[in-house]
Image (cartoon, rainbow, N blue to C red; front, side):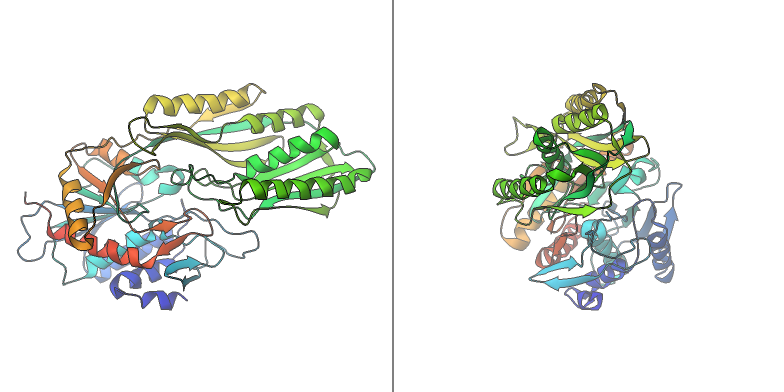
Length: 486
């Protein structure tokens, strides 16, 4: 499958993308891809450095006649989000991604593809190894752990780069050029519970919400997608009205920057309520399928009989859990007043996991207004503090303030219009980009972010558009030819 991808045009780009698919690279476990990059630099006799955080920088000199151009650093992150369907057998630590081509897209079998940001990495490698591309002196920066903590960008030293211009290759909409992004912060919750022994004459059931699209908690937060955690807790709240339902465990979502696609709850109910449970679940499933018929065409709610759990939440703990999750904000909080159709502030109820004596709840907040970022994080924390939970905010990361006079913005926009005879849209993005952190370390760096079209990022339906990837490659080459002199 991956061999077919390596045959796409331009072969030099897809050759390296195909190779990257074969190298496991989960966030915080980038050792194998780092080894691959170092070996690449050695084989191609290129200068490289590895900093204390694990970032890799590979340098290449200018081609003849371009020696006086400003230095450009092209930047991508080397880790990938590791999400798979429950029925997919895949070990992200060791197995290659099984990719295939369908209807003009590159997709993966039941897992995330890693086009975010593998296609950016592939473009950098193709550029570094090519001998027929016109460019000034370039640096290629490969950062670690972007997806779970922006660790590489946080740890970047102020003297590591020599470049004047940064091309961030981590955007997901061809024809859109980004010159600003939202800042973000995580809020984690430990909600304690007490358990009691499950009463006799009860049956055990597993309730499941699945088939949701999921997606990126920044790019996709305004697309009307369902959140599996919210959907399942809503069902539990409704069931409590008529059925003596008792929760034993809850498991929903995985990553802070992904909208929850699946959620499960193990419950116990009186044996005489079995028929009533079936009717409730079937009715609720139809209700949701009608509500989300446009955005979630594959949504299903199921139940199956399981071994009766030994213990359940006591009444008070169950009420605190259901009510707090039900009222916890999720989704768009405020749209920008000065930018049309731009999300200003949002929050994502990302994951809920059952630990020994508490629920561990992960949320993330984003805003292009720094004060609102902290305000929504405090609102989420207050929701759970009201019911006795412990909450903690992460360090967060800054946004990237747009520079309307950016020289590289004008160069990339002109190159796009020249190549494709249509104007690119210059805008800010609600997702977080490493540009904000890099800009903190290098305040005089002129920066822009662009990339090919990726859909379903951070979910197993992630797909990379082939034609837009070809356009992305052409645009990069055209931009490098037109970089101004020093």
